[in-house]
Image 1 (cartoon, helix red, strand yellow):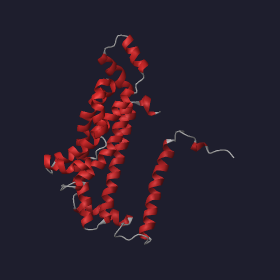
Image 2: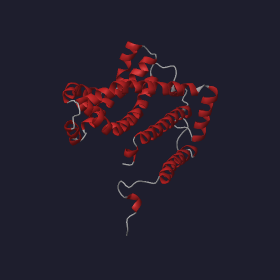
Image 3: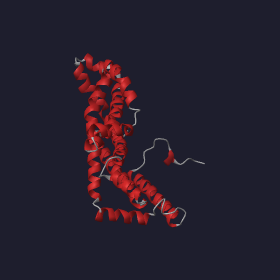
Image 4: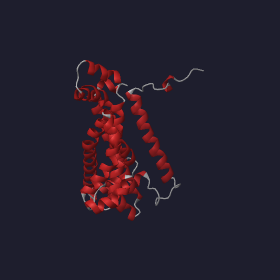
Length: 264
């Protein structure tokens, strides 16, 4: 019997097929969810059915101003993530390009990236209070060390023959970094930032669960007090939708900036 050619390792999938398969999973997921809840297999106290969940979502938008909570959460994610990029990108590039800098910062960065950002929340509340600075710092701490280490690894994997050719042609050290290392590593760095942005969303919800009076995480905690699983699930659903939108946007920007790399 011949093997199905659609399942050849690393064989690309047509865009239309990819879209159908992706939507198909969501349809299957909602169908299983509806069968489990509407069929009485799971009590509403523990898991609301899809109808009640989306009805709760409608009330959040029309009665409780949920759109402002979404805006605040998006601001916190992007604010903390941009701060992490401002610090993490230059340091990661420097560590990847110059081994003495890597030897100096590397052990600490490797140590710090294992520290959970949530563990800093009590300290950050003492240092920065319960305002926006505390939320931004949680996201910053959770993202910056990942960016530094991953960017350093990407820069450090540049082929040495490219650098040697540039030096032979008279390039300076700065020229090697700006004309060889960065152009070669930029597509992978962009993909790294896309991944870290996804992690930033997990940190903001943790930050909003403690000492917050707005945001999606705050709404989820309020819903938990009233045992409203519909609102809780809808809040989680919205986080996933926003994350999916930002992920697609990041991918589109990467394809536009680096079209030669997108097809790999």
